[in-house]
Amino acid sequence: MNRIIGTYETDGHVTEYSVIGDGIPVMVMHGGHSNCYEEFGYQHLLDHGFKIITPSRAGYGLSTAASFHDAITRYVKLLDHLGLDRVHLVGISAGGTSAIKLAALFPERINTLTLQSAVTGKWLTAEHTEYKTAQVIFRSPIERLTWRLLAAFGNASPRLSFKPMFSSLSTLSYDQAKHLIWEEDMEDVRKMNNRQRSGKGFLLDLKNSALLQKEDLARVQCPTLIQAGINDRSVSNAHAYFAKLHISSASLKLYNTWGHLIWLGEGSEQVGKDVIAFLEAHQESGRQF
Image 1 (cartoon, one colour):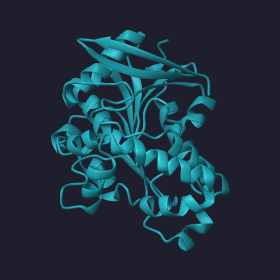
Image 2 (cartoon, rainbow, N blue to C red):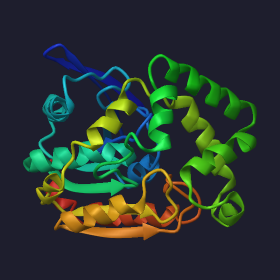
Image 3 (tube, rainbow, N blue to C red):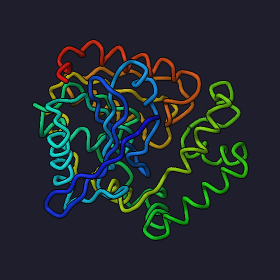
Image 4 (cartoon, rainbow, N blue to C red):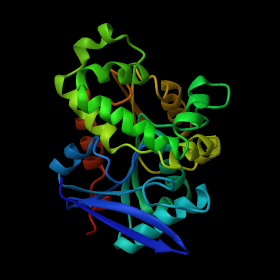
């Protein structure tokens, strides 16, 4: 991918971002442990003539912000900086909270909202084992070592390292999911582990998910597509149903993919087709550049 990396600074805070492709703009709010170098789901958009703008969300990469609300306003300032009046918006996993808040607070800037395996409200909290573990292994500076070890393990043995990663992403056993897993999925997960970093962002994600209220979802008025995998362990399907219940303009599509990463394996083709069909159905409102 021919990716252009830039930074935009206002009021002492930096927003790092990437731009890929040409055409109708799509802004992506990446998931947890990610940044402006995200790749999942991108190729399908590029192949169909969309331009992808991805800010590193606050706490990830070089991006900073004073608060969750301040981060949202900085994404709008980034659109101003890039000369973009309106965009299609995609919220991935933990980036769902930022996408929903952006669509709710600045409806005049958003053509459509797509939520993919997205957090849509209170997520992991102090009583969850995953929350307690995250406070240890994804806290700076330990998170740097965590991802170095995961990357090294994956680079040494992509197949062997895939199984423990798989168990954190899917409610299925590995044997149950074998028919849904493609050989290239292991390489994609290996590459993912090499670009992942938590920075301060993931712990902020855990905190910010509790700040999103059902009233925020109710304020989203743009056409909305919710996509979720039925075997997702990382973000339960309850988040997809919660969004469908409270966003009046939303449609919900569920997929029998192997887990949280709905862009990989059997069923992922339909995920991509549905996104393109949804965006193209509302394409005229975004044709401005």
